[in-house]
Image (cartoon, rainbow, N blue to C red; front, side, top):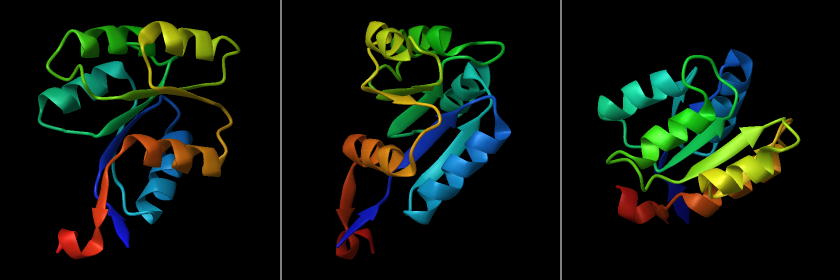
Length: 130
């Protein structure tokens, strides 16, 4: 049996979306951190957060998703995979341009969210987690 031991950072300016995704992922044993925008997310990374995956809304205040990815890629956190999450019709194209590993379209289906997170985060056997 596997156990999710990864941390996922959710970056979205909508508090309800952050909380809903957080609850879903925590139900499946993921550790979750949240940030309202790219500035807050970068501050968490620089303070020591080590997510296995970042789920990123493109349209956030202060530092938007595009600027966040550019700063992320120019830092020591460049290898963290990013999944773009957006309701914008051109989100997939922008995700490709930014080098995101995947793109989720809002409103996000729970099954698709979990499938994507599982695809890009490591798991280990429960007996190894003890």
